[in-house]
Image (tube, rainbow, N blue to C red; front, side, top):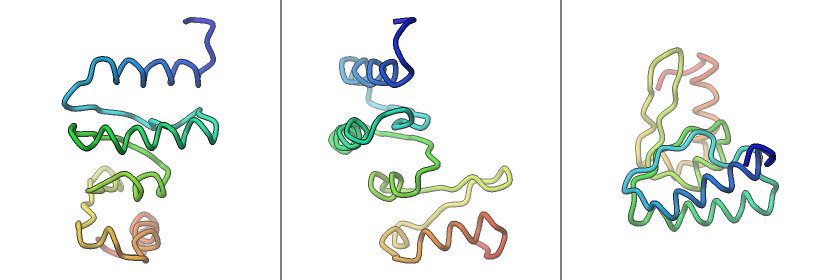
Length: 107
């Protein structure tokens, strides 16, 4: 495996998660290094996995968080800021988060 590309190593890691089937899965930037097709396949896989597992992941990709997450927190200046569940369907959520990170609005 040492000669595999970063993307191939990430694919292997996701396959291991599937085989191990842990109840809680902690992922850091789970779709980084995947091409568009594989990223979409992995996103669908994560959607299926979250039905009977707890998935916790970090991402800089807002659309991924909005597509996959039931709850979102934003790390801002060392503090976790909760985004309320009823705000997840708010069309202005992305702009609100960006404004909070810029320091232009309180959470």
